[in-house]
Image (cartoon, rainbow, N blue to C red; front, side, top):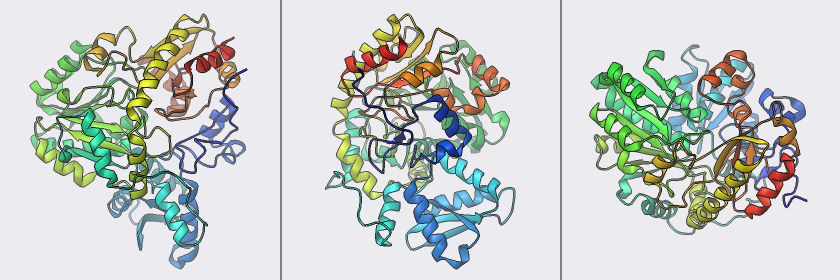
Length: 506
C-alpha cells in the first residue's frame, strides 16, 4: 500500500488557495487540460500561476467589470503594475490599433479589450504567461477582502520584519561576492529572465549586437522569450548540444561580433545537462558576449556559478519557497562582470515588483532552504539508484548523470548537491499511460517543493510538439523523448517514494 493518498483532479498542491500546483492524476486529465476539455477544466480551481488565471484574479476582474459601466462587453486582464499594463497594451496593439486599452483604478492595473475578440485574449494570456505579468493571488485576495467579497484572508505564517532584506540575506549566503545592489527580486523566475534579456539587449544593441544564442533545450518560456523578443527571427540561434564546444565556437566564429548574449540553464531542463562553464565563460568573454545562467533546476543554494556568469536569473518559487505557495524570482548581477553598473540599473528598472504579502511569505520560508535541500539531495540519489536498476526503466537523467558529472561537480557547493529533479523513460513502448495512471504520487506541474511531484513533462510544456509529426521531429532532433517523465523529489521518506514507484512499475 502506498504511503501517498490519491489526489483528485484539480486538488491544489499544497492545500492552499495560493498553491502553485494542482493534481492531474491521469493522462486523460493531462490531455484534457491541454485541449481545454470542459470535462477536465471544470474541476481545475487553480493551476501554475503563470499559466492559469487565479480564481481570486478572475473573481476580482468579474467584479470590476460589473461595477464599471465603461467596461461593459470588455475583458479585463489584471496585471502586476502600471508599466506591465503599458507593455501588454503595446503588445496587443501591434497588429490592431486601438484593440487594447489600459485600465487603472485605485491600486488596480490592467488592460481591457472587446470580450468577443478571442484572438486578442489568447495573445494577452500568452504574453503575461511568458513574462510573469498576472496579478498575484495574494494581491487579488486583498482587493477582494476590501471589497467585502470574501470574509477573511487565508491564514498562513508570514515574516514580521523587512522581508526583502531577509530574502537578500539568504541569497547573499549563496552568492557572497554580491552586494545588496546586485541582488534584485522579481515577481517570478520568468520575469527575471525577461528583465535580464531586455537589459543585455539594451546594452548590446548600440554595439550592433542583436543575436541571441540558446544553449541546450531550455524551459518553455525562456525559449519563447528568446524567439519572440529578438529583433528578427535570424537573431535567434539554437545550439542543441551543451557539450559540443566546437559547434558553439563555429557559431561564435560566424556571428561573434553580432552576438549580444547566450542563455543556458545549469543544469538544463528537462535533460539536466551541465556544460563546461569555465570554457563557456571564457568563450563568451573573449567575444564580448554576455552570459546569462539560470541555476533553478538544482538551486543557486547548491551551486557556485556567479563567477562564470555576467547575470544569474532564477526562480525562488523552487526550493526557497518550499511549501509551494509563492511565486518569486531574482536576478544577480556579477559585480566583476562587464557593464555591471548599467545592467543593474536597467534590470532594476525593468523587473516587476513582488507583492508585499508574497515577499513576507517567501521570507518566512526561505530560512528552511538548507535543510530542505539537504533532505532532497540525499533522497534524490536514492531514487535515482532505484530507477537506474529497475528493468522497466530505460533512461534516467539527473544532475549527476555520467555526461554531466564532471562539469556539475566543479560548481557544486557540496559533494552531495544534486537538486531534486529526475527525468526518466520507460522501456516498453506505450507504457507511459498505464504507469502514470497507476502511480499514486502527487501529479502536477512545478518542482522544488517539500511535496514530491511527477508529470509527463513534454505533454505539459510542449503539447503542440508531442501531438504533431513536425513537433515530434523537432523533439527527436534534440534527443527528447515525448514520453519523458519528470519526477521532482520532495521531503517525504525516500523509501516511500521508491515503494510507490515500484508499485506502478510492476
